[in-house]
Image (tube, rainbow, N blue to C red):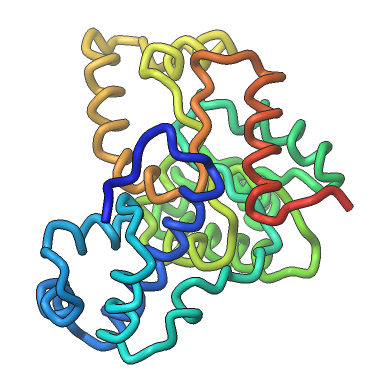
Length: 258
């Protein structure tokens, strides 16, 4: 058993993340503790936790003991899930979702959709009007409705999600089950600068501690973003390189152009 190395090939990382989801789902379905499963499988609790986090490159023999602990076939744990119909882009505003998304969709010859635009169309109102007139709960209900239609529809698509969708537990769990998830990460400084470059100076208006608040927001959401199957860092590469990297990563999960 070894801990997943940062330089491990992307294909292996994706397989380990898929394995982590299956193991965690099995344990939760059976209402067991991680400690109980680890003991039956002969693993340390620390290593088992890393297995569920997708951070442990477990030897095949040890994985067989995990399968035995759950009374399932080893092949059940190793079988790859069917590829979803959508690629879901996660991350804070300024991460590159609206820039990278259309280019990746073009490469895959599928549609690009911004979920917030779908919500606006559904409501017949702008996001600002939705929040001012009806509040966040109404927005979240529309978000769930539009997301379900997108991810269960027949058409394949790349969908840019709002940065705060991780606060919508129902929606975020649904995305994890029904889409290939991608986190477009960036430094806090780049997030801030890109928003301002778009002509929106509100983040800095009357907020001397804007950067500190942005860092805190990113820190609070990062554990959720890190659950994505794929992460592409957009701060240290050109748009072309980011699109190439993400397209290659999607190919590793089975995505191909039509």
